[in-house]
Length: 114
Length: 114
Image (cartoon, rainbow over all chains, first blue to last red; front, side, top):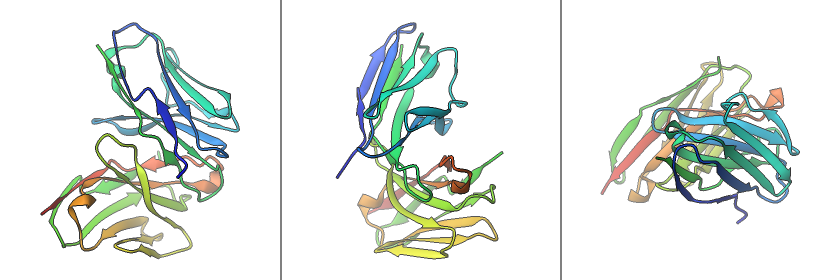
């Protein structure tokens, strides 16, 4: 089965450090989503792309977060500088970008900011 | 704003019994309703979905029903097994808007007691 691949699976770093999370969407999928999951907030949509163009990043703190798609096989989410409140699990999902088609999730990056 | 309410937040059932999880959505433009199962340390995995032109869909032990008039949809799991224990999320997507964004419910933690 084709899968969304996320790296790293776990990241522990100190406050103030830059964090980069990577996602390889399923081949042929043209829509990529970044979500953050916490106990308190559930699944929050941070940003999403279609055909590598950002369509909506309104869920993302703009001062420290940035999301890009350098090419069709790689999406990145960066936090600079990181803060303890950024600790969460970050998921990437991809889809065909067509009506009534599901999003497929990776297994996430568990981020801990000390 | 757009909202999906999900109930109950936790559900414990005896092995072999049925489990029902209910969701209510607010955006009448929603016309695609996926259900995801999330196991510990994994990303959400699609288990079943339903389109707005269908009232019910079944796949082995799981079924989903949709009442568009009432803006309700439900997940039914029959003959529950210990491996059904997980967190389940419903979502609604107004695909006619062209955004393919999901609005997720807050999740239901299902425990199947052996």
